[in-house]
Image 1 (cartoon, rainbow, N blue to C red):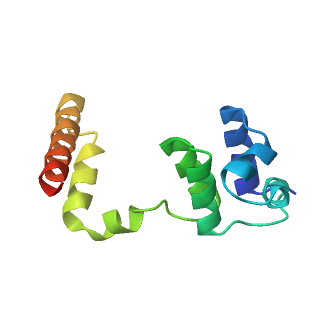
Image 2: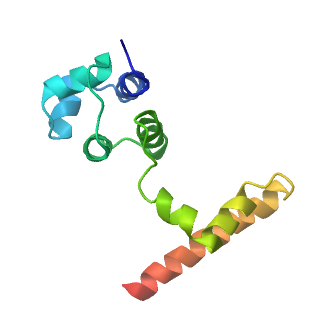
Image 3: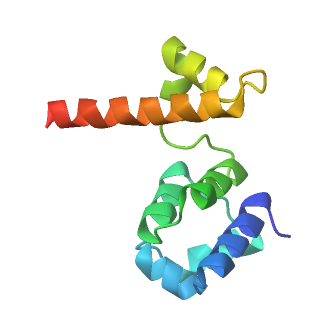
Length: 122
């Protein structure tokens, strides 16, 4: 009986060309636990998903699929949901009433401001 997480993990491993044993080594997990996740015999903790994502260097899309399939919000999402200014920005970036070139410009401006802030803090 495969679970949503088991299916997602199997797909992500295939996309990365990773065997379960290799993923286990990269994530510093026992091989048997990966097998149990894939077959649906066990469900992961948030920390285990984080270990897999970090150790196997999954991209953001793959990480999102794994977190959601395991029933967790990705790291940092809670902060976004609680910050009204960030929620306003997210709403604007996803508002189809705002023309795509304006949304793209907003994304670039936010990215530039984040870069400047990090440089100032360093």
